[in-house]
Structures are given as structure tokens and as C-alpha cells.
Length: 321
Ligand code: ADP
Picture 1 (cartoon, protein in one colour):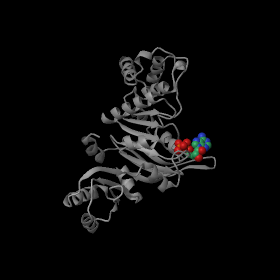
Picture 2: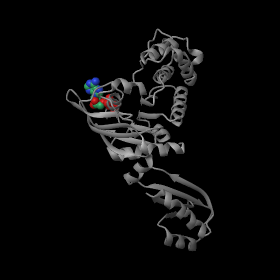
Picture 3: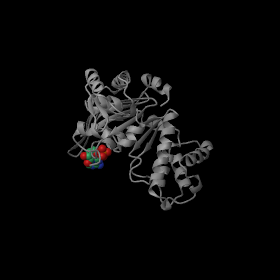
Picture 4: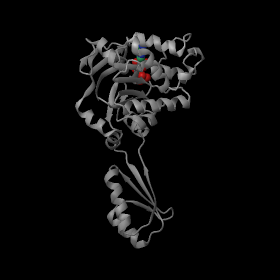
């Protein structure tokens, strides 16, 4: 991530969500969601099916109305400034919203007009987004002949035509081919690097680990944990493991090492294992201890706690239910 983004984050709130509640019939989908997302941040909303991710993102992106609570977008109250808010947000909903009998180009023309993009710039914007999504050469094909992944790419293009400051993406890579998936990854990474604020729901842990500055874990309509991945690792109390392989070790070295650190030394496998909740400070300590004792290290592995494990501990559920 670009260094300047970090500095930027601290001062500019882009999205604030206060005590959002939503009930469908007798299903309490949101029970009081609070979020605070800064400019330029890539925020991941994670949770199992039915947790409330789509409902939250739909309310933030003006698609749905909340029963209670409020949302501020770029310091504007969403409830009273929906039109102004819509101008600065792009939405990629789960459901593909395209006309199957029209070409990709015609679909984008339709969306651009809907977003009131000035006609003098619309055609250029369409060309740019088509290039960005790798579909310029297929622009005149009708959507009906597109694969699921290509449709998703056009859906993303349509959300970018009015150059929004915020992009809401609801599970954008579900059920699509690897090629489209990789292209979408590259595009979101570029958009983020260029300063866009992105709110991304997913149940793919590897996506969250790759992109998100911060994640909120949502379960049963409530945020049950929030922070950077490292924050979540630390607060979950689940230990990470430093695994060192050495060339050889003497009895004396084992004794001396054990005096300094409570590691598990396995002479048969020639390994030292050190479980820790403070990886950053313990890693240099263990390397220095090895070096002081003249141990020849042949390999160091860090066995990190996956987000999946943290998630399971926090919610008692697998993400891929
Ligand atoms: P997620 O996106 O995390 O899968 P949703 O926000 O779609 O979760 O759903 C939250 C809860 O609200 C679930 O229990 C779901 O069944 C319910 N729900 C969502 N949309 C509707 C709807 N239109 N009518 C009735 N219940 C709904």
C-alpha cells in the first residue's frame, strides 16, 4: 500500500454508519451496525451467508432503506442527500444488472446516461473502462453471448463511468472464471492505489488477506470484530508459529537455548518451534539466540494464523458454510 494513504486515512472519514437496523418480516437482519471508513481505505466486510453483508452494503449504497440508524457519505447525510451521495458512489451489486439483448457498449451507454455522465466525456469513459476491464475488443458483442465473468466485468465498468470516489462491491468474484477473477483483482488493486475508497464483501479469505487494510467481521447482523488482520490475529489470542530448521545442534546448545527461550526443539527433525502472539518482536529474538549460540539456520518459516481460523474462533462458523 502507498505510504501516503496511511496518513490520509487518519484525517478524512469517507463513510460513517451509526446503529443501522433492518428487519425483514420477523428476520432481524441488522441489529445495530456501526462502521467508520476513511478515505482511500480498502475495507472488507466478511461474514457467512445470511450475516447481513448485502443488507449493510445495499443501505450504504442507497439501494435499500434502513429501519433505524444513519449513514454519512463524504460528510453528507445519506437520508437527506441521496442524490448527491449517489454521484460519488459506484455500486457493483451481487445481481448482474445488464440488458442481455444489447451490446456491452450499449449497456454502458445506458448506465452512463443513468448516472448523468456528460455526453461529451461519456464515450471516452466507456472506452477507458472497456480497456480497463479487458473487453474493448468485444464491445459490440451482445451481453447474451458473454460468459459470467465477462458480464461481471461489464457490471464493474458500469459502476466506474461517473468516476466515483467510493466503490461498493458485493462478492464480485463469486462463480466466475479464473481469468476474469484475476483481472478484477488487478483492477481493484489499481483503483485502490489511485486513491479510491473500496468497501468489499466476500467470504473468500484469501481476497480479504490480499486487499483489505481493515476488515469487519459480521455475524447475525452485528459486527463481532474489526481491525487490520494483524489486530485480529493479536486479539484472537491464537498463536502463530515460528519454525526454524538448523543444520546440527549439540547438547550444550540445547541447554543454553532452553535457558533463553521456551521453544520446542526436535532433534530428529532438526527443528525449533516457537509459538507466539508477538511475532514481530519474537522473530528477531529467536534469530539472535540462534546466532549467539552458533547454530546454523537452514530455513525459517512463519506459520501464520489464517483469517479463516480467526473467523472460526470468533463466530464458531466456517466462512464457506
Ligand atoms: P449476507 O449478504 O451476509 O448473505 P443478507 O444481508 O443477504 O446476508 O441477509 C441477512 C438476513 O436477512 C438473512 O437472514 C436473509 O435471509 C435475510 N434477508 C435478506 N434479504 C431479505 C429479503 N428481501 N426478505 C426477507 N429476508 C431477507
